[in-house]
Length: 334
Image (tube, rainbow, N blue to C red; front, top):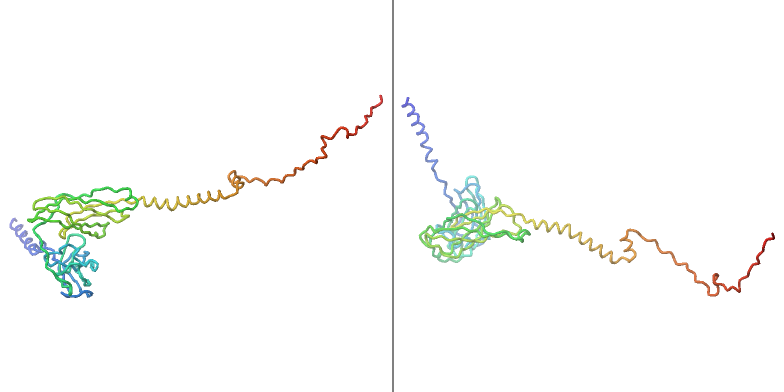
């Protein structure tokens, strides 16, 4: 009986062995291909890629002072950002997009820089030559220094009264990093991104001034600023070396002061103007009509005066006695 059970277990293991390598297989490596390795300003090339995450937003840029394996030196400030393009991979992680050729702000060597916008960072730099663009040697890089966040991040600051009336909310992002490399890191360049809800973050480069020696820590403080009138759920992310090293949620209250302002503007202001207008009309009315309007009744018009002046030569009550005629009194007979 035991031998039968062992034989059954061995049979099951043999069936599972061919599937074991598939379970441990690594994810495909992102790759990028260009339709041409060289083109001049004003032209365009087709950029295609495979092995990327499915349904992922990518950014395509032509960058100077860069080479495959060294990354984009100086960050996206070395790229022709105005002529970049965005593309979303399909369900198989592939894409194809036409990219206009533009001269980057830095001299060549140049690359076509393809990177994910959200999620885990994936970056591929394909060598490319911008015909007619100046060239210069790559600057020296100290690649032995690496930064890692050693403590959690937090947003410091409060919203003032002006933020309630639509002023831009501001905070200070604080986190501690440690140099886990073998060489000092001088003036590290960070990318701070703010995202609203499910939308992709908007990245802004900020440089921290200072040197972090190997094995040492440093407290990093970076300002964060949103647009005027912003409200809702936001998230703040920090990138260094093309990787997201910290994230922090940020809930921004609604600027109710703006709503109150519009209520005052729509209701109170017309009422005040009406009362001012009525006061002006009341002042220009004649005095009689003004008093009548206030008392609530209208007086009838006054009757014309009929007083007649007495004649100077005739006064009935004051006639002289000599001019009066006395009547004889008639007495009755007894």
